[in-house]
Length: 441
Ligand code: ATP
Ligand code: MG
Image (cartoon, rainbow, N blue to C red):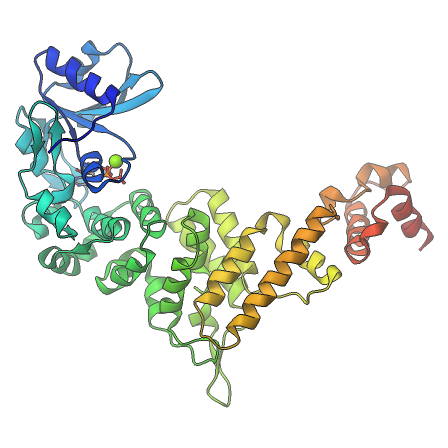
């Protein structure tokens, strides 16, 4: 098998070889090349020790020197070059206590998680596939290298990685590997939130977010996102719905583009439905207040998973706004945009459409038509550059101080009154007009 390596990768490998070391491209890049996917990055594995790698290349960065990883810079591009290693004894299902460098490629491939990730290649030797990775690629199968229970007890994160790769590649998890996940997912408790977050984001932004079903079925969800289990177990007796909250959630993720914030928003948009559910005298379920409560729950969950503040705030705002349905009149729409925050648009329309598409067919066309009209009005408002926030108000604090208002709380209150007025009547957004309106009133 011939794999077309990028020129720079060829150069790194050739340099290492010219100095008497062995070197291969390895892992994800080989898997992706064979699948015809574009590799995210090219990792190189070598018999050279880190200090030997550093002696060969003029520009390197000590990325993870204790694990044997040096980044070699070629122009502006970096390539991780890692010394063949055997992971020593594992402590508490996460970290190898120490790593032992080896001169044996096979030892290095053996420590890798899945057969499809344990292939190496260089032009001279061709493909090194010691664990039948090709067969598993062809069978679309995620299978551990070696004994699954052992591999998961070494590093519990691999269980989440298994479903993440299944979701990215549209593969199934091999039976024994999956059984081991069911048996051992409790060990995920020991894995840091940061590592879980990386894999979860790759999973939810993948081509197959419906793999969340398997995250639930295997028991992984109970460890990393118990709120999702509750959603999977919450029925909704309501004409707008035919699925449990969890199934609806998964479908809504499939209906939205693979953007981190949007997929997380769909994952969490109904997270508060279980706690907000009430039943009326006809046995119909209602979920009053679930967007607001859901925004707060989203904050807690995303914080727990150590997401950055920007992501947290954007997801929260979309969750809070997802069910907001203003009457389609100019003033109501402008007020809604102000209330939800201009930053939530136009993404909010994508969220609303995905939500509707994942509901029952009851009134579905009407609901979609409403979103089309809402979006159309939004676009017109934007084209006319109508004022939608204090930033765009023609009067500011200094204007009021110049008119003799004392600096302080009152300023804010007056500006808000003016904004309310302008949201009603956009043509009033002129400094003199607004000042005259306020001081005469
Ligand atoms: P991606 O395309 O998402 O980068 P990848 O396969 O390159 O996928 P990485 O997390 O970048 O995944 O890891 C690179 C390689 O290192 C993997 O292909 C695998 O061989 C090995 N690897 C990474 N994490 C683990 C782990 N937790 N346990 C065992 N091997 C691992
Ligand atoms: Mg990678």
